[in-house]
Amino acid sequence: MTPDDEAAFETFVLATGPELVRFARRLTLDHHRGEDLVQEVLARFGTSWASMSRARDLRAYAYQAVVNEFLSWRRRRWWGERPTADLGERAWVQGPDDEVLAGTAFRDALAGLPPAQRVVLVLRYHHDLPDAEIAATMGCRESTVRSHARRALAALRDLRVPPEAPTAPTARTGRRAR
Image 1 (cartoon, rainbow, N blue to C red):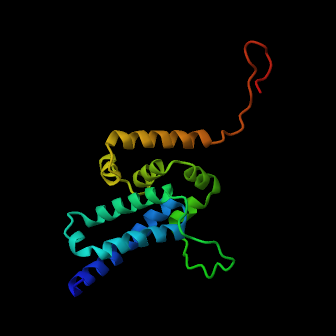
Image 2: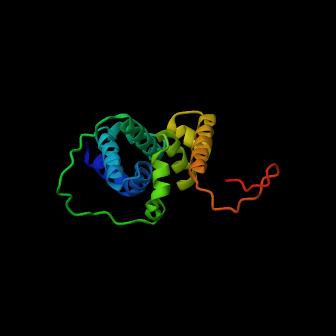
């Protein structure tokens, strides 16, 4: 890599890296796994930067690479990590989007969605992307994006617990419905 390529790659990482980490964190629902995911993508970018830097929209390509890496990570059985008793220091600073994800019910609901549906919701509602851009990022058709969104929202609605409502007597028996 030439010094000019190194400088361009470093500029790209500094400008795009933090937003890619926030995006990956929303997908994985885990700060550290999100950082690992982006690190994998940027490491691959660095090894082929000379050819990649000529891409038309490098930022969009990076988002697509993060989505692809997330989907492939979800298919793997083992990520190469081993648990340890020493967790070390936590370098994570809580961000504004973490307050939403901290709600265990919402977090559990998102975690229960298939990965492609979670990607669609994150891109649509956190990044305000239109269906055409989501489809381009995921490498599918717009109708597939809409289908994933519809199914994901239906699954989230089904998990909602309705508030306690007074029961009305049924017309047939005069008893209250249970």
